[in-house]
Length: 88
Image (cartoon, rainbow, N blue to C red; front, side, top):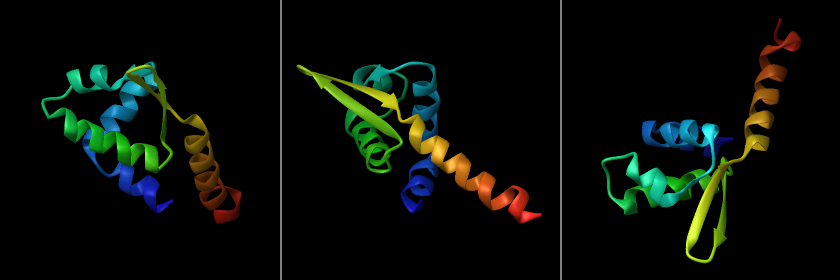
């Protein structure tokens, strides 16, 4: 869970997550939305992948990123268990 919090602590990474909620995107499409270097975006994507918040699929030279909803569902289930009925 530490990786989750670290990954979500950065506003750029939160924005990437928000963008991927709408649809899958390539690294280039993501980079176009920010005024930072491609290397910086690659670093953010790496952190999100390591936290398993996103997945990537490479086809030839193109990498497409997707939101990993399973991790978010597990996170929400954990929050619900902690603050749900058991927390009353």
